[in-house]
Length: 161
Length: 444
Image (cartoon, rainbow over all chains, first blue to last red; front, side, top):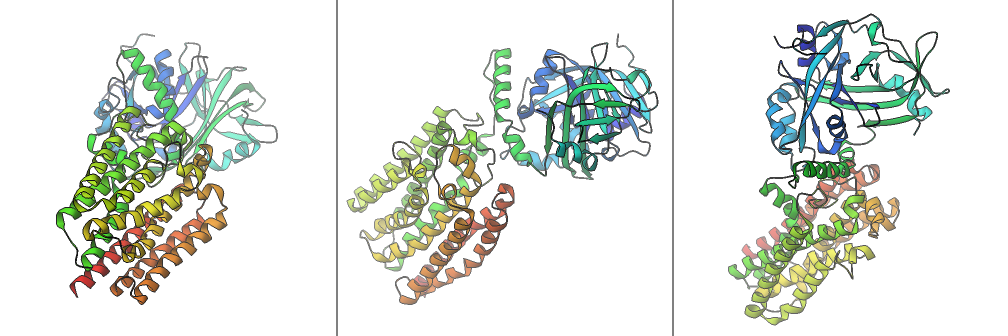
């Protein structure tokens, strides 16, 4: 069991897409669809330098939220929707290979990544990637995906408000 | 920019739900999924209000995102698309109403992932500059040396050199003139000049802006882009090109000195045509002469040169044998230029696909293929080339899918890709069969 409640973790472990919302320098929320990866402690997302504005925004303002909302992209018997708020950090210390530390988690969700990685020569900049590490602080869970009902709210232990 | 009524009108068909994202009072973004209905006539999106403490703030600017993918179990997913809207949110009797005044969207069925990625290259460079400034060291993208060499030189295109050079060698051998070491030097020298040309082409496509303007490169078109991506510096690629030319020219001079100075004018012509293909001041490809130059360089010039160094004289037979090969290699360039034509036009490269209509280009392709194979039949039947060389017509059916793809996918670079590959096979197969025809003639 990780830092998040079991139903939230179940969604994170199967979701093929999530919506990461960051805040741009003007204070505007900007949302990006990304694959979420989770190791029980931290949520990882990776971003190519081709689509790196979100990385710039996180460096300016680390407050982010991550939603899993699409029933089609989640393989679970008990669908729910979740939004996780947290603090993000960008690891771009080694854009070429550093992100490969999350490759096992990525491979588990998207086995085709190995095929695409084999074609690295065709899309070299796509595989220059930063890792976004999100440390959760609060989660909102809507059982059955019913957001017309109030969510269950979970504060992550050890995180000060 | 406001979203178009068409975009708003199509939301319901393309997406199952919306996500409202806003910044909460604690400074953290909040995002909540909800049902929606678009009203394109009023330019608004009606959203069901979420319950509880996740109510979006009224009157503030929010981001409403629609996202869709189709999972492919065991593989990943496809049908990626999203629409992101921004605007003020207000409460109505039945829920919430967004009046969007800004939009971003992508649908991989409308814009391929490759093009979407290419459009991100300037952002990638900006980010690399920022990381370099933050860390105090120059951060560049990388590629393993082998892959980088393969990509920078476009090594697989060397078949365009091997075919005419080997053809010249077998024509000479059929006439009783053959030297192994001369053949080996000829192949290496020709390959060096070709690689020098490939790399020089990238130097000038970078400096002319053609690479930056081209957002639809494919495996076969659009150049290597190694400088555009920042994988090699302009100085590095210039030195690489100069190195290939230097080795190629040195081998040419050795062959001149040992096999006869009659090769010199042909060698000089080959190097100049290759260099000034894209280089100023002549820039043949910018003047609409690229196809003719390629036909000459990778046809008669290479075949006659390879023949001369073996036979130490010029003859009509290698010239005639090289003509179909020259036409077919020009057609490789010609088809590969089809997806590049907007970028080529922007960079002032007046290639045939830039200058001519689709109908003319497609018909001229069919006519050129017919002329190339007609030459093989006539030359072989007349005995101007060896008779067994007529087997090269067996490659002709490879032109059919290329012709069809040009007709059907002229404006779709990625749908054209298989045809571009088939067109390269057409040149290679025809060349190999011509060479085989000569080998049969030598043996029989």
